Image 1 (spheres, rainbow, N blue to C red):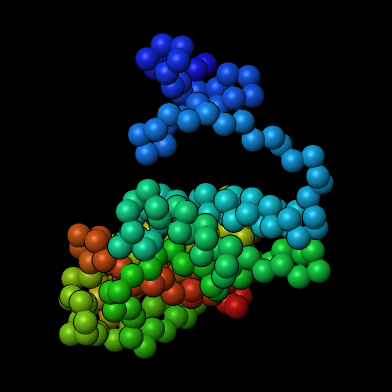
Image 2: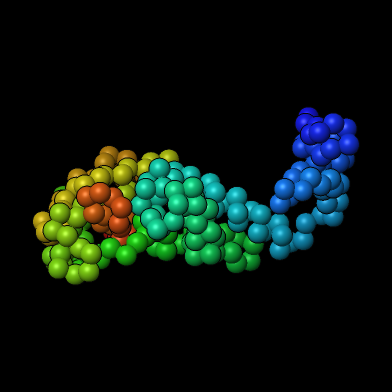
Length: 215
């Protein structure tokens, strides 16, 4: 539907047939509606479209988390696009028409908060044991900065976000593994944020748990 402005001789907004009406810099203009390309996509274009679709689907389960912690200097509405762009450039690899997810390059959070110092992880008694050194005197770091852990199954059906499981000065935490990790490969990410959750560090990829083995 089109909306006429100032009568039939004035501008209009909307679409009539193959004509589109819009206002550009206060001036009403009309132009032909763009036509769908009749050319089949090139192989490069086809792969790029598939890659873009994969980036959207891959990031969907994390959007609620990344909207809060990823690239906090950007407006909230921009963060999804920035995350997809980052994933396209760094996480999805294309070789010989095959797509590979580089899980170790994915970022759940990003920012200028100081991260972990001498982080160490061990797996024992169906639990994850994490230790680090207190670096609360570095940069923007504070003693009460919160530690967050993300567990995600390789098929993206399980996403467990464990918030505020420790503080920076605790220097250690033990996290029991959920039952689903017995049957499904799981990837682990850890990061810190301040208590207001306005600053975060870049998330750190801890590794992959598969069939009880830490990889």
